[in-house]
Structures are given as C-alpha cells and as structure tokens.
Amino acid sequence: MGDRQSAPKGRKAVARRKRGAVRVQQNPVDLSLRETVHDRILSVLAELGRDRGARRHIVDLLKAIEKKVHLPVGRSLREELTGPMTDALFKHAGVLRKELRDGTIFDFVYRSKIARDLVLSPDEHPDHVFEPQTTRLFLHLVRNAKQVVIGGAYAGDHAIPAAKVIAGNGGIVHAFEPSDEQRALLVRNARLNRVVKAVRAVPLGLWQDETKLELVGSDAFARAIPVQARPGKQATTFTATSIAAYAAANAIAKIDVILMDIEGSELPALKGALPFLQKPSGDAPDIIFEIHRYYVDWSRGLHNTDIVRFLSGLGYAVYAVRDFQSNMPMDGCSIELIVPRNAYLEGPPHGFNMLAVKDPTKLQPPRFRILKQGSPKLLLHKDPRLHWPTEWRRAADRRGPGRQR
Image (cartoon, rainbow, N blue to C red; front, side, top):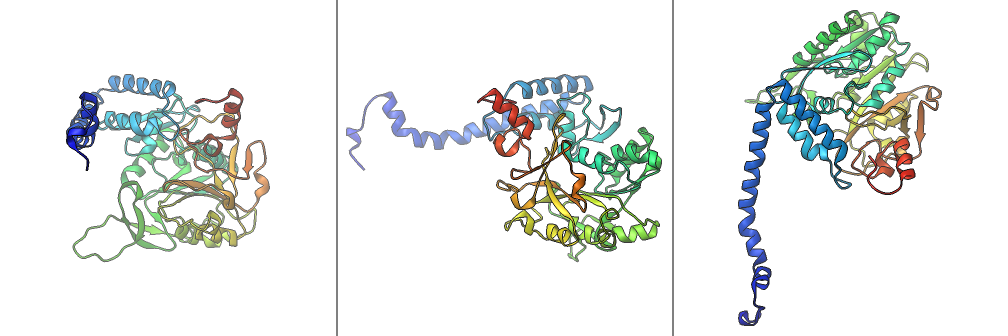
C-alpha cells in the first residue's frame, strides 16, 4: 500500500496517481458527449440529404476525402467515416439512378452496401454496379448463353447487363427475386434498358424442391429455411421452387449459366438443379455462387465444405473468385481465381464468390489468372500481399514502401 505522505508531490505526480480514477469518472461523460455530437451530425446530414444538390456536393467531398486520406493498415475510412455519413445523407433519398459506362441505366433504392458503394464509386460512370470481377466473369460466361438463371436478382445489378449481352441471341435471364420492392425495380430497369423480352422476373425463391420458406436472423445475415411452426411469432415467408421444377414447367432443356447470392441457400438450390448439373461438360451450366462463413463451416478448409464437395463430386472444378464486395475500378486486372485448398480464410466472418466449371480450359490467361495462394477477399485497407489484386501489388512494390493507393 505504501505511505501516502511519501508519495511524489506536484501537479504531474497527482495526475499520475489519480489517472485511473479520473479515467473512470470522465469517460462516461466524454462518451455521452461524443454520442450526442455523433447523432446530431448524422441527423443534420439526413436533413441536408433531402436536397439533391446538397447530396451531390457532399458526396463529391466524401469521394475527395477517400482519395486523399488513408488510415493505417487494418482500418477502413469507408466503414468508419464516409460510409456512415453517406448512409445518413441518403436516408430519405427515395429511388436513385446511376448510368454505367456503357449507357446502362440502373435505378435503385438506398437499402444496402451495394447502394452505398455505388453512390461512392470513384468513377462517375462505372462499368459495373457491384463486385467488378464477378460482373466481368459472369458477362464472360453468358456471351453465347440462351438460358441464364439468377437466384437473388436484387434490382438487376447482374441481370440487366447479362440481358443486354444475350438479348441478341434470343436468350432469357430468369431472375428469381421474392422481394416485391426489388423485383419491381428489376422490371423497371429492364424497361429502361429495353431488355424486357430478355428478362423474366420470377417472384419466387430457390430451394431443393417446391416449398414455403421463412427468413431467420436479422438484416444482411437473414437466411431462408423451410417454414417452422412458432406459436405467437410472425415470420417473413415466401414461396420457393427448384430450378428443375421451374425448367420443366417452362420447357427449358438446357441451362447455360447459374448465378446465386441467396444468403446460405445456395446448396439446397443447387441440389434442386441436379438434373442439369449431372450433364457432361459442354451441356452442364457454369455456376457462380456466394459462400459465407455465417452459413458455411469452412474450419476444415474450403475444399471440405459440403457445397464444394457436392460440386466436385459432379465433375466440377471449383475456384474462389478474388473480388471487392464494392464498386471498384479494376481496369487492366485479370480475373484471379484460387483453388479452394489454398484459399486464405482468416479474419472475421466474411463471404465471397466462387466459380464452378466443368471445362477449366476456358479459364485462359490473360483474362484469367490462377493463384497458388491468397485471399478471395480484396480489401484496400488490409495486407497487400494477401488482399490486393496482383497488378496493384506489383505496382506498389515498384513504388516502394508507404501507402500506395
């Protein structure tokens, strides 16, 4: 314990002696004040955001900040500052519009990270809506397609560009989207881009068979499961079908490409397409699907997950796709793929897209690059050796140490 009278004297000594107590007493006050100021700033941004001109000026400023200011490795300016400010700014924005580089018009509502990152795109007219490499990969696969299935079509971020590609072939994108709001935007975007005949908006979910599904969980991590009886509790439900049943009802004999982002329902939905997946190379569909740690246990390696083992057992070669889950210019970058056994998966729960093909010879350089190792998750604020595209990492190495991008 010691003798209080023998303790050091003076202002600094007193501060050192009382530092713990001062911290305990002052922190709640400081935090409360900080929370009040934070909430007030976001509230003011929400009010300013009612004016389109104000939104435009503030977004330009936020983009300039992102271009010039960088936090230390491991911290994201988008997640800590510019993203929350943009969320507040567009709280009352209603339907928004973005014109892509090729003239595609995309109407959307500000409900997701897709909307946030499209608004904050470094390009005024980007060449994609979300996930640049997945978009490029998908459009490459559908070049000669006639029948394309999308599970979780959203407002058409992939469906509309694909429809523009295959419309001249007489092809159809079968876009499954159970959300009434998003499906209405999908139809609206098809009309705006004059591809109504090439898009079939289907108000159903996808599953292994025809059933009723409900959403469990919250927000972005809600997943679909068969409806369960829960007395006194209301659930968000929707009807689902299988790809095989839908194809039989619509006289579809061959499916060329399947794209799925359906929050953990990918494996049941793929099982519902088994008659098509069992076909030989050249007749079986190419598949792009999302996988996420919240829904899939990859603790024994990505190659040992149920969905990868299922597809591998049907003769598919499966790869993790390296991509930004954002809107990010990637001109000049090859589409990078990683064999599941070698994918770097450390970090908090996260998701990324995967590719399954029965003919790996179509994945030729320079369009494609197969990596021996690396993370499928491209992130600007993480270790460049694991989380940057090869072209950016090489350019950074040539420039030397420091924050390069």
